Image (cartoon, rainbow, N blue to C red; front, top):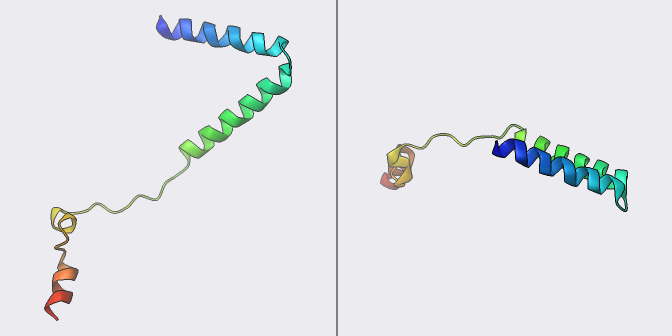
Length: 69
């Protein structure tokens, strides 16, 4: 029910902006900006490798080996 009310409010404000100053241009500009935001949010991200508890403490095997030398 809440989402339906939210949809109705958004539709009313969009129609009000269509008939206001700037009208169609402002609605189209907003639509393009929202599409750009969605593209940025949904693009692939390089994930860092999972860290082991020893890595988090700074006691990885590589570091211990270098300290011993």
